[in-house]
Image (cartoon, rainbow over all chains, first blue to last red; front, side, top):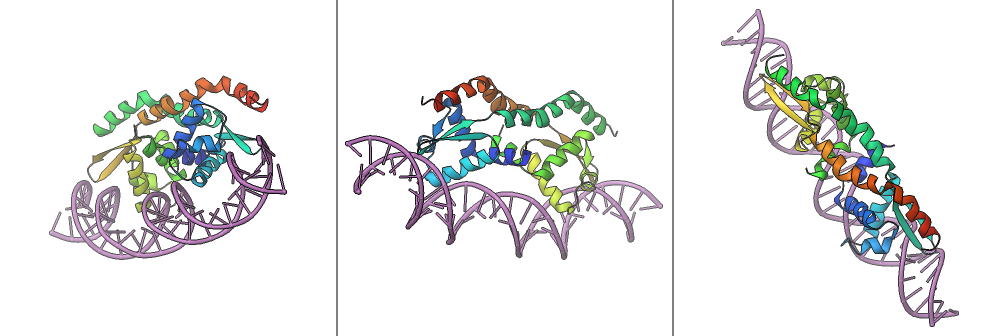
Length: 104
Length: 104
DNA sequence: TTGACATGCAGGTAACTACCTGCATAATGT
DNA sequence: ACATTATGCAGGTAGTTACCTGCATGTCAA
């Protein structure tokens, strides 16, 4: 997993919306996705390219159409590396803070 | 939770390193964090400001020092909104893909 | 009080990002 | 074949980002 690409891909509202749209109905074409976006088709293409680079979306060509599918694996990897790690520490954090405030 | 701020904050290797450093030892000062960063103090300040804006880091002043603490809550929120949602669909995705390839 | 230390603030620059327009290519259906 | 439809590719631009230098402020300890 390339954490940098994944987080940068997720750091844009349009791209998060694209993922939501694909979650509602997986396998949509570029044209279908554009109908919900309020921006030029070319801009959407760029966003989808970034999602694909981050492996968050996979594509399949069917004739002149390009179908887009969510790939949930990188999201799960993000969870393993960047959420669980800090949750494990969660309970100890308040304790640390208190200790510091008391002068350590 | 402001997903935009959180993802943008996480979309930078330096800031992710800062979170890791704080995970190893919570409550470090700006100076301590800088020792591990290989950039000017002012740049680190900027990164910590962005983490703080995203509520990923909280600070407490102690005299002339500023102590930095991780706040794991936004990470958990990210998980709830952006990981679990797509995991729920996980099993059905391959099925969708297959169906599309067969001509739907 | 004064020198040393920890941080804050202002501004400047090169690189990146998100958007656009215009044109090119490829597949479909009549 | 030809008009239509779906997507690809090449640039151009305004705004953002990540870094820097220089100077100001606030705190500690002798």
